[in-house]
Image 1 (cartoon, rainbow, N blue to C red):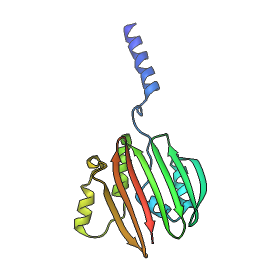
Image 2: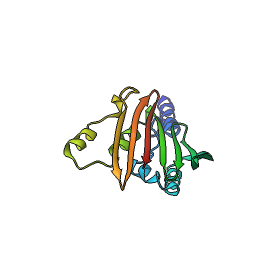
Image 3: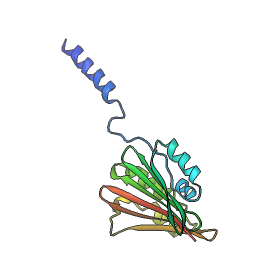
Length: 167
């Protein structure tokens, strides 16, 4: 009888908690996708929707030109603010809870890299665990007359990635 009870408890615990208990859902977002989304909001919206993000707020604003602000979120642990002002500057600010450090690492590793060996080595050995508000990190490059980059920092409990493009 004791053996049957132990087996039943084991089976019930497997069904209740499964192999995914305590694991984060996978978000396949990359820096390349976010950088492409700086100038293509439809593409970015499609990528975020496919990854399980929901559009929470969207409104237009006037500041020199007409702009758009969108607020996306994923399970209340990943947030994306998209601020676009066509012709001048665009921003995507991604806030990632520290429990999703694997996504933070992937965003750094998938940032387009220059072909300089020393630069590649620097990125390969960079870990988000070393970030703080005081030790912010910046990656950037020039793309067809536009400066494109990302500022990265950590402010407990979130990693921040601010992608931007400007003329």
